[in-house]
Image (cartoon, rainbow, N blue to C red; front, top):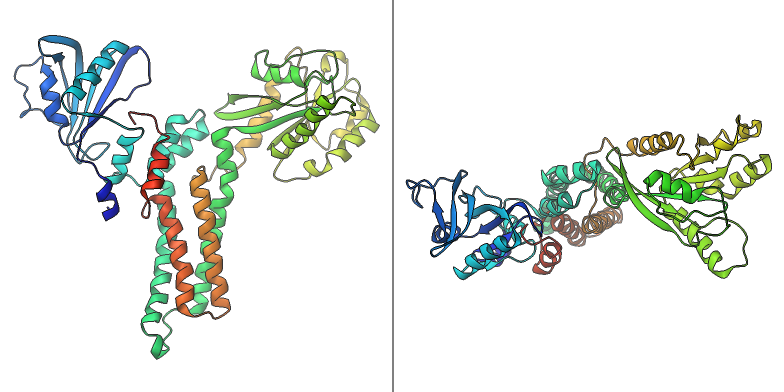
Length: 469
């Protein structure tokens, strides 16, 4: 633990309700700090008369009552976690009570009356970091784990909380430290013109570091998608069934459906989890020439959404499409179709109007095509499976994925510093100048895990946590 962290540690005891706000079957009230056990025994009466403050054992449950003088507030289960074997690394207490809002409030009031302070947002996890129970990236992963709403978001957050990401950053930083130590050693013997660091080996190491950093930075786009949902733009001409398709995918009447062209004038968004992946569907304005200024603004936004999307569903009316319109569509969206970062899927809609698939559709079969009837919800499951398959094949086997904007910015800055180190060596710059860029790279990597941090950074991170965590 750094001396900086020692200055931030507080000696007071804190409390908060750790469960979600509102009534429920049970609620958990937490305390952390050196007076936790003493305060507990001022308000707790165990059912077993043989149990006392002196005989109470860590990590065991005890049944009894929380009382305010002669008034019993609730029957509870309490547990004590002796430092350093607790979440925060301090003496901690958890009280499981009934989930009445009144009971929760009375519990907190009683603890505060006995000198315990209400915890700030994220203060329990902040104390865990300051006490060396986890590093900063692991602490941030706690918030991501709580907020995870899909299988992939949960998996990535859990892996990061267990130290997978920290381990990778630690390995990179260790390599840089070894590199820096050789350069610093040369500075100590600068008058003797001694070279301790083999320049060829340094260039190999720098190239390895650059590849590692670039790989992590590149994963941020996918990591951001995991947290916020995979953007899927539903596009096409007016009246092809885009809004009906959105409603069918969401299984609710989210978008207005009408035979009047131009009904959808702005993007409509909603999310759904399919097979553990969160998809953010965006129904867009129909693509056509229009003299309506409002509709044209919607069409402009459609192209913006196409640029932002990872998956593009082009919906066409299968009963109307012909070879000419097919070729026009292919030409208009050629850029997106050939973009390796996007998946372009043709959704041939309104198959309920046909007895057989028209021959001219052979011109479209070079694109991945799913035949559906959005109105009757036919083959919607096939479209859903196609979407999931597209995502499943992306980065799924890579356990270390950057999902945090702060980490992305720090890694990008570290990569820039490493590039400057390489340029400095190529140009035979003095070792002291190269060392400056090396220290910068080490600094940025250190900010990711909290080896280097400031009160401002910590305040920004933990203020986003819920109270009680």
